[in-house]
Length: 106
Picture (cartoon, rainbow, N blue to C red):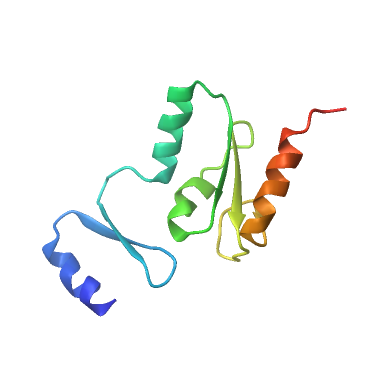
């Protein structure tokens, strides 16, 4: 990790986003994040709303902009610092959540 921080000043316009340890994401400053990518995809597909699940620090871009009318954001794994309104404890719970969401009312 020290090597990444030591190299960062030489990578003009780069910023660090922490992933699951030991991964580190180096991305262009001002470059698109996961929220912007999600909005583009939603617009391309013509969807009015979507469900997003993530388990990484880089998913916080989506969680902090969650909109109850257009975006249901769910964190995988509890994190007290996360901005996600909802969470599931582990990945194996994802299928159950999707099945519940897919049920027709009534």
